[in-house]
Image (cartoon, rainbow, N blue to C red; front, top):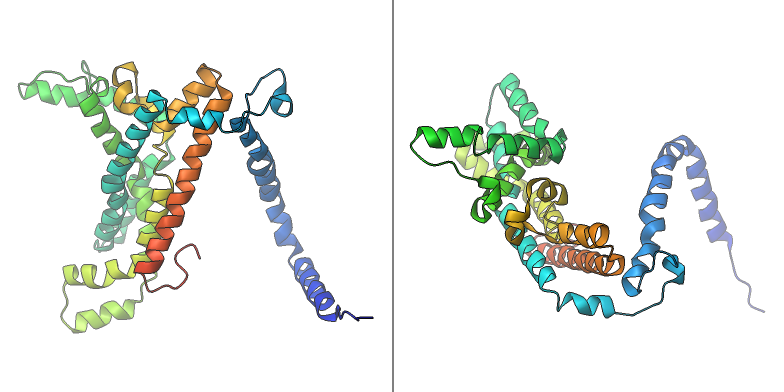
Amino acid sequence: MQIINRGPNKSRMAQLGKKIWNFRWMYLFLLPAIVWYFLFSYMPIYGISIAFKKYNVVKGVFGSPWVGFTNFEKIFTDMNFARAFKNTLFISFLKMIFVTPIGLVLALLLNEVKSKALRGTVQSLSMLTHFLSWVVIASIMKVLLSPTSGIVNKVIVMCGGAPIYFLASKDWFIFWVVVSDMWESAGWNALIFIAAIAGISPDIYDAADIDGAGRWVKMFRITIPCLRNTISTVLILKLGGLLSGNFNQIFNLYNNAVMDAADILDTYVYRLGINNMQFSYSSAVNLFQNVIGLALVTVANLLVKKLSDSEEGILG
């Protein structure tokens, strides 16, 4: 008869129980967050199953019949989906090119400001818009860009031009989407890089001063290289949201006149589910969107792992 030694396992369990008991108050503080995530993030996961069903409100999730991948097959023949997919990629790529770097640029510029009062004031003002909802920001944009009373069009008229319906023009709409996102997120994105810059050892800068390095040399030879991992992490997170064009922003800014250029996957799913009550198909589109996002994050992390000195990549 084989004797199994369970002593080490019991010892480890006892140590784990002791640690939990010693930090019981910390776990108690975490409990509300754990309950919230369980109720609102994990329990609804079963609702994904309606993407594989012909969902009927009366029959419910459990009573609706399974249809397999029928809803997903429809995705590849839906012209409206193709339009939303193309618009999402286009807007997201523009934001990655212009919006993502603006936080790094602002952080680098603030790092060169010697006056703490001025630096703190600029940083606070630039972060203020992040705490405003897109309903408020969109309202401000509509007032500023109004063809009749907007300050932008008033300047154009004063210079001899004709008023422009910015938010009703397909060409101008995307431009102002990118500009408004830069305005809203620049300060918050800069905060991440400012924190990373604060972690760089001052001894490196002191050594550079002894060697006679100027501000630009220190910025490009010390600061930016030391931010490599932070930049990689931000890039991975942005790639994960590549198929999410910021629903709140687009929903509050777009209109029927720019639907062909402004309709993204998030707004398309919203209209399918809420307006048209195509719950199964909208869930399939949303699941497809999330799976692609997960794949992009994984691929980006593998690329960073190959290109960086880290053996584990950013996400491990």
